[in-house]
Image (cartoon, rainbow, N blue to C red):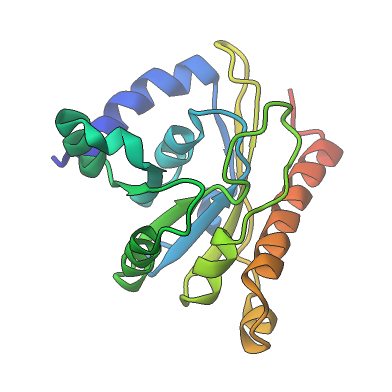
Amino acid sequence: MSLYKFAKFIVTIIFYPLYRFRVIGKENIPQTGPVIICSNHISNLDPVVVGITSHRDIYFMAKGELFENTFLRKLLLGIHAFPVKRGLRDRTALRKGLEILKNGNTLGLFPEGTRSKTGELGKPLAGAGFFALRSNATIIPCAIVGPYKGGKKLTVIYGTPMNMEDLRSRKASAQETSDAIMEEIRQLLENYQKDNYIT
């Protein structure tokens, strides 16, 4: 068993009863082919939650400083994380992300770039749009609805694949594409509240 699958198994055992997960729309994630899962960002645990609620192995970016420690570097690489220099246009990280998608794998992104302290959606960065436009990946919007409190229900919603044909054919900007992705996430959150999924 790989380190990724072992870690996922252990964390799943701990997190599912702790946060009483409700996962909606998991079937929207394609079984094969390149996929980008784009989620809102409300906690440092979001990558873990997306990782254990998806049936795909997911690659995430992590801040470069974490890879300076030899042991931590090996651990992070083992669970499919790769370094990115925050605040800079890190061409190495961009190439790595595109390589992951070219190989038919799944890339997990948080378009806002940083977690929201209020839970409200923030302005997305252009990164998610860059990967969406430069690849033929299926884009899956994802919404995480908290709170992250033991015993409270935590809901993860995977939306239907976005129709990227128009954005790609007219060569929309990366920022415009990120904005469109964030709007899909916003719709997931609004529909969740309107349909009163919370129990």
